[in-house]
Length: 241
Image (cartoon, rainbow, N blue to C red; front, top):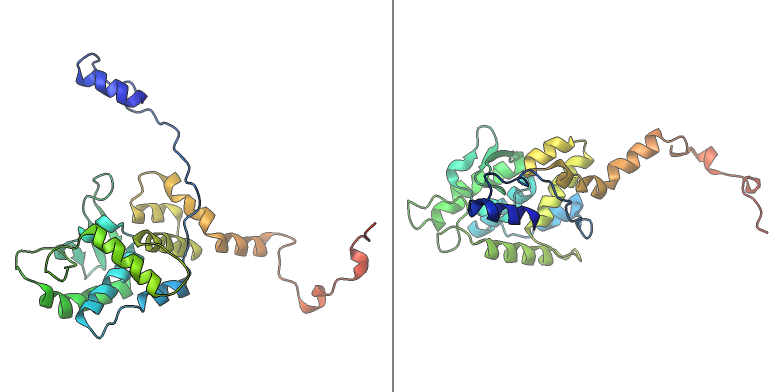
């Protein structure tokens, strides 16, 4: 409200500059932690498309890209063929959230499926040589974000995990699995295209695996007991009154 009011005063030439332009207001906290996927659950979802069919190859490439890069839905549908740098295993994310460009690593598996899609499937879907989109619909055009979200949601249901979600579920999985395996939080911030580190820090709460392992390794009473130490005499516990 305050920022909007001062912005209006500037537009009306009632103020020479907006004094609230750099004002950081308290951010609304998320209602809950993102719903997570284990690696085994991700593998089950990735296995849903029938890769013996060209469209199945496209679908597998889309899922691998979502998981490998942590891209948002709109960022993925905006990818062009020229945005894929196969030699370096990167994709250029153009006009991400906030209008910023960034580079994101694909990962070996996602790159393998994208290259297979480009070789086997995309030529069959291509209707116009001028269409630059990386992932094409069955009509030969750029995918619609809403269609992509609905399709990913149905694919997750087909995996029969007892969980619901869409493209963002892969984004969460990408971040938490990187964190579980020791990735620096600032590197994850760069990958996901977060403007603020505190947005990325929600994944430190999601990623309990690393915290548990650190606790077991470092806390004096957290170390794993040997078989002899597991036998605790009853005398060690106070008797109930």
